[in-house]
Length: 211
Image 1 (tube, rainbow, N blue to C red):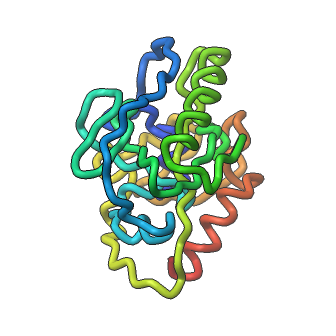
Image 2: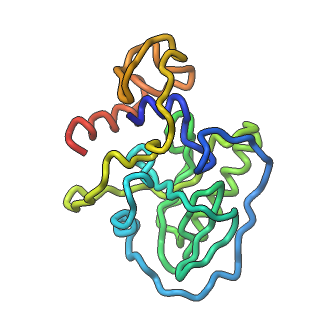
């Protein structure tokens, strides 16, 4: 399903809308982080708490949260951007990555920094890339470290795109009458996502293996 929806909606740069008009902005670090205790000794343990809808492409955390952009504290510090919640602790450590939302490829990594330091560095690079592209093509997210020994108990029907209407496959020159469809060479666009994308191949392998 995600292969099909990604081609139509990409990575959903604004959490509650599949499309967004770009507005130029530059990230400003927040310095007065509330005093708090660490909650997760590793990024993997943080992943245990997330629903399937918050995992994008089985690779990155895209945790939607209905709050304005900027620093937010709710017994734990977060930084909000375009409706997504990012851990912003100066105690816990995070593995942030700058991701190209069109190709689903990692552009740069900010692993094993305190969450706020990693996010600040990633967000500043993200905003520069997006400014150059005049779009929200690039995003910062934590790398999702899946634990094969852990039972996530996910609702697989409640996924990253489950709230969006069915894709009109005719837009791509080949008719599909369900959500899943079949991949073919006519379906993929100029961004190269699909049959030649290692991210897509990895996802297909995981899905076929019962992920």
